[in-house]
Image 1: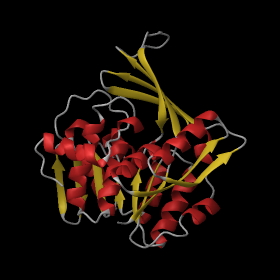
Image 2: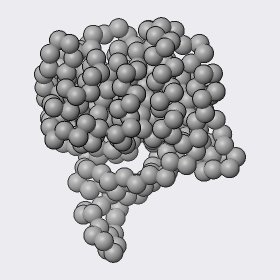
Image 3: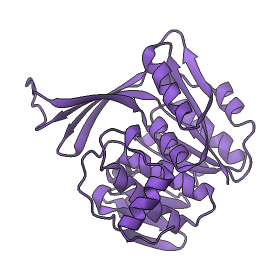
Image 4: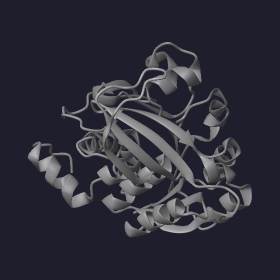
Length: 301
């Protein structure tokens, strides 16, 4: 099994469930308030580790209760947190999440997540081996995304980028990316193209996977392009589903499964995550995932 290295965010999720989203100036009474460990990086690490991956995490938290809890949560599923740094002068990241009829809206204060330094990236990847996997996303400082992808690519790691939240400057790092995983909106923003198919063609990345929520995903690489539908589920909460996809994909790739097979498994895993409330809390372990596959008569493992 290959090791998985993740540079990512740690945000405490403060989630309220609503019957409708508030209009400007409106106060809406919610229900089922939840606090949980989240952030795209933490969620992705949680998914990969709960499935059984060897996961190493680079990130930063403030010296506060939120930070302590998130680091403890990562440890609880076996993630190597020796490269999670505690900052004295800035708070841990926080995500304010509204969930309505299974869909979500999120506001972020990234805090300590935006303080990753180049020397910390170098130390983090010092023991990485060619063929290991490196995954990052857009909830840390932009400089760390650029430098980490460059370093991982130079070392011969398989590099994956989940460009969320997306900004056009991320495209400058595509030369160091083996697999890019935007959603439909992010693909359009990064490329300026109206359709995700046209966006994918413009990226010049060896493998492009555009996630499409309940519609599945679109793949473009040297072998051609195709659309794979998602399985049908009655979603309760889609928060973290994209992260479930990315983390699970890394896990299956780390076990040397072919990309096409890994993507199918990751898609089912992401769909399964929408059946529980929360982000990291919705990530299933391997025995639960295998049971889910059997229940759905999906012969994928």
